[in-house]
Length: 438
Ligand code: AMP
Image (cartoon, rainbow, N blue to C red):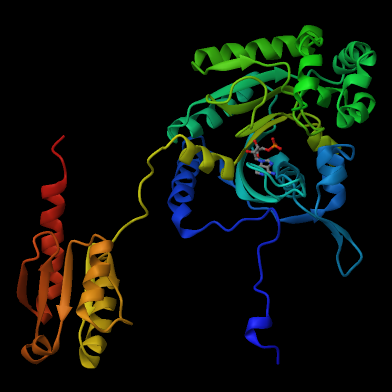
């Protein structure tokens, strides 16, 4: 057998993170807001598998995008099928929409999701290889009011979290007007190719749009006065974009027309947008979330032509922003009562008392592995409970229990058989006293 000291402790896979107990109050707060918004806006939760056929992503996200080309966790399963861990969740949701015949439901079908995604990208601040996304998808309608409503949903998400964000918005046009714009853009980039970064040199012919959102300062300068898609929209796309902006004005949403928002996934058309923290200026943005219209995706994946619009937000970046902007979030629910015991027999009796308190919906804590009263009272203090119930040898003999008010330290002897109603009465009185008069 290998000696313990020779065994190397296992470590996290690079780019993946544990979400530790100290962070959970942020995550819980974010999840609460997600659920509240889903209910308010009538979105139903859908959970799709973490793994899907690789083809689903090459078809939807696009096989020449960075995500599919370099960032997917792909493997063959034991049945020789090509499988990938999802790099995003819209593709799976659209697959489910088609597979479960949701086209027959009243449209738009409004779905939301929450779960981990995987991208084998270079880990750095705000970029992990496993990260969580929440997303909302409205499938089945092409009206610009849905674009505005979905942008509003994400805006509300950040507002409810007390985070100040700006919506960066652009239009990517459609199959009619985008090729025309590509020609103009290629013309502009042609003479500048040698001055671009290596990535952009490759992108120019394959994905000229991506040159616009390159984060390299030099590339940004070169493309600062590049022609813009919004100046080359067809009439339908222009009307759609203008109507979307008018609805946003109506909703008093702060947005910034930003021609450099092009999104990295192939399926987007018309409206596309990102949310950036108000602290981040200019185009060197670390987007908190983004989305747009994807009117061709359902058909591309085998369904009927069906317009759709959606949005996804990264939860790690959201939690980081909550910490960065020093937002106070509610503590995870606390405890009102602590059960402390002294001696073997008392511990047994307390085990039962504890179960009874739980059954009476009392928020109760314990530390049955501790023997002395001091460490138990210290923990009770740390948990900020209102009362500690102490059962020692004397109380065991008398059939009583001590009720210690943790605020003043006053202890009273109470009949053991009456302690639960007594505690409930006291907690109720405290609640009334502590609730501010409106
Ligand atoms: P995307 O659709 O790629 O823009 O992703 C939507 C959101 O997911 C981003 O705005 C981020 O908040 C989050 N996100 C995307 N990729 C990562 C990553 N590698 N690590 C952490 N968060 C990410």
